[in-house]
Length: 139
Length: 77
Image (tube, each protein chain N blue to C red):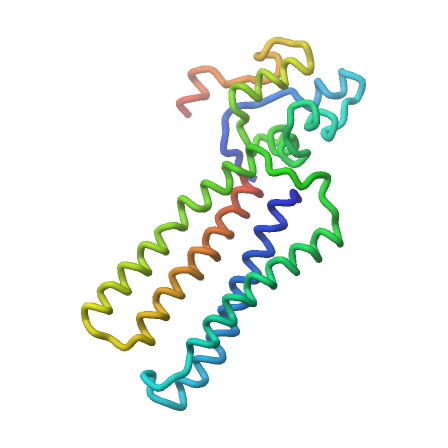
């Protein structure tokens, strides 16, 4: 497994894990209060920061367990990266589009923020998954 | 495993014919990672034309001794 492939695995695990934690915490709060009163901002910010830190930690652990021959990103890594970003960028577009419509419909900030966050998470998770499939099965 | 390319290659045989050149040594000579050489050998990655020439140059053979492409009949199947 190349250095970049390990990084992609780490990013996938960290992004999905952080969002799962966010869903559990905010989902529990939403069950006990109207969504307009649910406190989500701090959890959203902290899970985003934690995702970045966890990604670095997981990558370091993978690299320690099985060191790569080289940390250099080669032409195949770059092509796979571009392919993954090309496929997953639509989740950002969809999230922004949905947020625009929700803002025009004057929905609560909670829903607008969450649909944008979901767009970012899907971009990260689907992009990473597509890249890993490309690493394993070819472009 | 599905091969995304119809291009086949003789890199593995050429490596053994050239003093058992390792995948890592070949990777070093053409400036890629060992994983990329493995992917090319297994038909999971089609190198650029430039990289294909670099590989052929390492083995000092013409390009079509390294890479092969099926002719018309197989191509249309």
